[in-house]
Amino acid sequence: MAQVDDVDLRVSGRLRELRGQRGLTLSALAGQTGISAPHLSRLEKGERQPSIGALLQLARVYGVSVSHLVEEHEEDDLSIVRAGDAPVHRGQDGRYTVLSGPRSTISVVRIELTPGKPTKVAEHVGEEWLHVEAGTVRLTVDGRKETLSAGDSVHFDSARSHRLSAAEGEPAVVLIASTAATMPMRHPVPR
Image 1 (tube, rainbow, N blue to C red):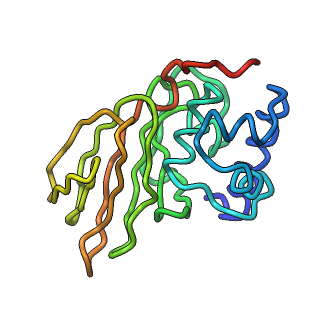
Image 2: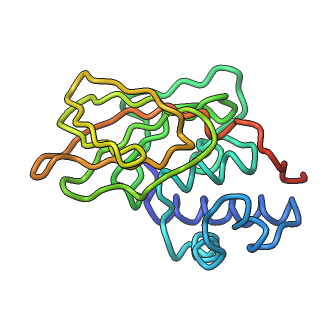
């Protein structure tokens, strides 16, 4: 399992590399992602950990998978994530594991939500499907609040403002599948 510092350095390095390859300024990238230029700068320097929403949005803009940003993969047309080998990362929103491969058309993440600590508000092009594996989750989509229990699922347009939180006092585990990483952009970033 990779050290948290190694993952943070890998993500920050890949973000810098991708922006450099495309010849983008931080301001231009901020306009494409909705993430402020100062925050993007801190992510690229490894001073801040990206939220799951930020990873999805950056992956979408760059046309890569979340797995490409986070994991070390060899290119293969069969991506297997073994239960005992899946690296667990610590991020702003809690502990997470990327379950999709580097060339996936969807991003699949398993996140362990910390009780009482909501995720950042996210809005990104695409669709999102959530499935609660354990615990109770509070989902807010465009101000509408829903409580989901283990076994419940929800599917929605991820361009709508949304956030998650585990119920007070108990952790929750959620599977998130999002097309955000691969949806075509309205204004494509040049390669």
